[in-house]
Amino acid sequence: MSVRVRRIAGHEGGLLRELRLASLREAPEAFGESLLEAESRDADEYTARARAGSAGDRRAWFVAEEGAPPSPIGLVLGRRRPPDTCLVFSMWVAPPARGSGVGRALLDAVEDWARAWGARDVVLWVFRANAGAITFYRRLGFRRVATGPDAEVGAPYHAWAMRRPISAER
Ligand SMILES: CC(C)(COP(=O)(O)OP(=O)(O)OC[C@H]1O[C@@H](n2cnc3c(N)ncnc32)[C@H](O)[C@@H]1OP(=O)(O)O)[C@@H](O)C(=O)NCCC(=O)NCCS
Image (cartoon, rainbow, N blue to C red):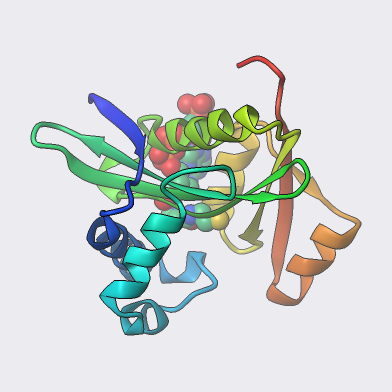
């Protein structure tokens, strides 16, 4: 499978909406937002989100694509938490593409972006019941954060905070 990961461009609000709705339809239990909430946002809001994440070091959406013409198969959002933590949200890979390294490639893209602005670690929240995703993150070197503010943020939602340090070199 030839997979390409790239940053979503400012004019690609429609693609962002398509992927976000696909992920919420397919894996509603994995995310904090509901499909209804995501569907109720109008096209302008997705355009604004795509634009806000298309350049700079505040946030970045990445899409994974395969084939020609390219067909979207995965999504992830990286957000900077100043000064030097990168938060990860909305990680999703389409079921037929799973188990082939697409999730890993998406996180690599986020990490490369974050390293460029000096991030020292990546932090995310995953629902405790999401055993598959927890195994995935562990395989990639994430470890549970059991104490401190990030753990407290997740606790009311039955979510774990997980963290991976970013090495200076890839
Ligand atoms: C979790 C998810 C993103 C993983 O994507 P993926 O493309 O299948 O992951 P990869 O193929 O890159 O897997 C990387 C490693 O994790 C392992 N892994 C991935 N999913 C796994 C699972 N469900 N159970 C056990 N191991 C898993 C792979 O075997 C691979 O290990 P390896 O390096 O030894 O080969 C995908 O299953 C998904 O979208 N799930 C639904 C949405 C979701 O839960 N998102 C997370 C929200 S916090």
